[in-house]
Image (cartoon, rainbow over all chains, first blue to last red; front, side, top):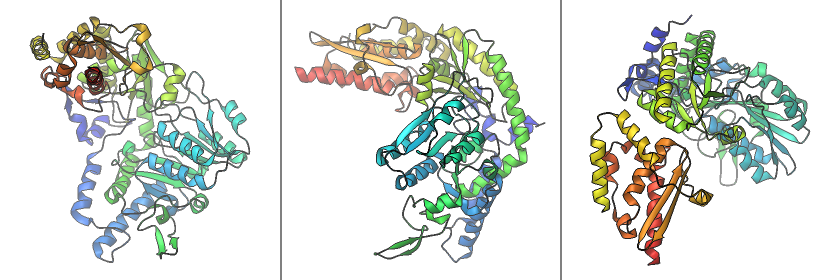
Amino acid sequence: MLDIQKIRADFPILSETVNGKPLVYFDNGATSQKPQIVIDAISKYYQEINANIHRGVHTLSQLATDAYEISRGKVQNHINAQFSHEVLFTSGTTFGINLVANGFASILKPGDEVLVSSLEHHSNIVPWQMLCEKTGATLKVIPMNDKGELIMAEYDKLLSDKTKIVTVNHISNALGTLNPIKYMIDKAHEVGAAILIDGAQAVPHLKPDVQALDCDFYVFSGHKMCGPTGTGILYGKEAWLNKLPPYQGGGEMIKEVTFEKTTYAELPHKFEAGTPNIAGGIVLGTAIDYMNEVGFDNIQQQELELLEYGTKRLLEIEGLRIIGTATEKTSVISFNIEGIHPYDIGTIIDKLGIAVRTGHHCAQPIMNFFNIPGTIRASFSFYNTKEEVDALVEAVKRAQMMLS
Amino acid sequence: MKIKDIQEEIVDEFSMFDDWMQRYEYIIDLGKNLPLIKDEAKTDNNLIKGCQSKVWLQGEQNDDKVVFTADSDAILTKGIIAILIRTFSNQSPADILAADMDFIDEIGLKEHLSPTRANGLVSMIKNIKMYALAFDAKK
């Protein structure tokens, strides 16, 4: 069992007030808060070892390079990648997806198919649409049911030897659905397709094992898992990363440059042009250490309790409907109240100190599917409490009274 | 009434409230008196982009004045657009174009003025001014 008060003391922002009320932070799906140890590690880097990496022979450069590469190793261990050079530092999930989609431009031909799920964030739709426009490939969509679960029978039917890559999130940002990615990965491989997993919403809740999953690509952001903004990871199987062309040209990613021909550096540097977010990359390792210290078993237990309690309490509110009722879901509750626009509720409860997300959550196709303008999304983290859930319920009731 | 006088009147009304709750309740009330846009005018053309809620706005010329009607699917947004319409409807295009928006700050809605704010107050003001500009050019 977690000592929640002890955990909360690690996060200075959680004792702040907003609009004169104690902050209740339920927008963890957008970004998580940061523990003091992460905040301190950023200062420490700049105070003690700031230098450019992989370049200088001087001591500081060596110290910074070591710290950066140690962090890469931490990520490798965390996701159980076979090699550290399969772990690429990026600026976030969006960059990772774009890198892969861009790389596939050299592989796809007209008539090939890209399969994307109907549960995706815009950042896992648009890069593939752009890829299809560029190559003449066709985008096909894996449909979902009324509970917000992908329909596997339909997925099976969509797969064929034309399918070149499948892309799906591990967990849906808008609804919290946990997708059956192991099944989807195996099925994609049966037809010879590659598969990318968008793990942005998964890594705050669980530890993915990329070898056990056998996925070709797994992308995520650091800032949703207690790390700094502007950090992220693209895991790719060595064979795939060797096959894809570089995404950006510049320093660091080259072996030899002449005006006639440039040869590219080995992995991972081939994909890491320019000076990276060194502090961010190093501190992402600190964040991963912190989360492992809290323990993912503990995290999941606490979040499951919040999900069950929150679902029960919110359903006590008259006219409240939960959107996304998948059997397998994580601590996200997306809801609407009959006759009231989500924007109105969000604005009022903000004044009561409650931070939730309202709107379409960058997933307009999902909102269109349910024929709603948007939802109110409360996404819980392990540092949230049942008392905070109670505060949310009271705030929503008060908003409902004002607005009806 | 001149735009400046209407704005002062609105500022006076809002100064009666001590907390956000009363202010928001008043905004909700104002929304109930919004001059509603005709259903057939709720077209994509009249839909203001950049809002989390839907806002339709139409400006029509009545002699030398511009008359605005609007609607929204969110109650608070309806109230906010009602405040704008009360200020700008039945005014001349030149006066609308010349008006400043400082009173929004004074009634405690400054946070809604950020360009990324989801209610699109900035887009609403822009659309109102665009109508004025279009009618002004026709003169």
